[in-house]
Amino acid sequence: LNSSTNVARRPRGRRPGTSGTRDAIASAASRQFAELGYDRATIRSIADEAGVDPALVSHFFGSKQQLFVAAVGLPFDPAEVLPGLIADDPATAGLRFARFLAGALEERAVRDRLVGLVRAAASEPEASRMVRDLVSTEVMSRLADALGVEDADVRANLVGSQVVGLVMARHIVRVEPLASLPAERVAAAIAPNLQRYLTGPLPA
Amino acid sequence: LNSSTNVARRPRGRRPGTSGTRDAIASAASRQFAELGYDRATIRSIADEAGVDPALVSHFFGSKQQLFVAAVGLPFDPAEVLPGLIADDPATAGLRFARFLAGALEERAVRDRLVGLVRAAASEPEASRMVRDLVSTEVMSRLADALGVEDADVRANLVGSQVVGLVMARHIVRVEPLASLPAERVAAAIAPNLQRYLTGPLPA
Image (cartoon, rainbow over all chains, first blue to last red; front, side, top):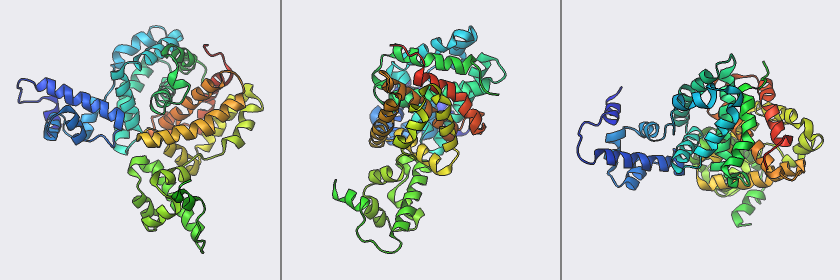
């Protein structure tokens, strides 16, 4: 750990309002990474929105990359969510997973985080690498564990391709009519495809 | 048409080497939009790579947005490709479409264009809007025409979500093992899912 990470994780100068300020910065960062993308969101623009000095952003979070990881990250903990969605009954997991995803994307805070992640993945190489590391460790491997079959890693990647494609098409590019469909209809449309990736026949 | 579009489409001062220079700029642009993304590729960086003055890039192509449309665009003409892939026999189109896509993505020039499009779609709003317009007019509506069923527009969007998700996961984020699978195996893995989106049951 370098010193700026220490600063980010364990702010020393605890004083009234510290956690409120930190939250305000994190929430401005999450919104700007989603709305502007990784390249165009800056420490300065995030500080402006949070109404603080840019130096305070660096004090709490370190670099822009560290701020990204802290503020965007995943909107839920896969270790907590995936067992109930998948491991309990893989044969019917497609619809549960699809409903969870489409429903979660209706919430502004969750959508901002996922859109921020996808936009960062498509931006500069360092951000893309951060997303790959995060997704590989936190999502793909846990999804594969929840499935517990031999080719689970390919299956997890294929599920991921449909999830990221849905976020792109419906929430970033916003192609119509997909962007305007009710969440429940989107869930029903993608569920059988997710189910096949999870448990259907795959070529060897 | 504004005057810079005229310049871009019909360069008047024809002289030896004009089309070679234009091609060199277009090819540098296509590579940089794929490699750097829309935000970080600039008229200047593209001119540098092509070994020309930035003013010449503007002379041939107009603005960065116009250069993007001219240099990235689609790697093939959907009106030419889709009838054979889909309309001739929709019931077996999934595998043909998947093989065409996975095979085309093995070619550097095609991959650069598709990666450039997807990265631009995830970058700033103006670029994203350009991609949405291009994809809606040139791909979605033609794909829907080729299918010729009532809910063809939703089906086309869903196919698009899987295509863009594959480009993101395999060629931009490069999650493993998907990024290293042979193209034929990728085609076989996604084919039944494309087939369902094209002709399978969808919720009303």
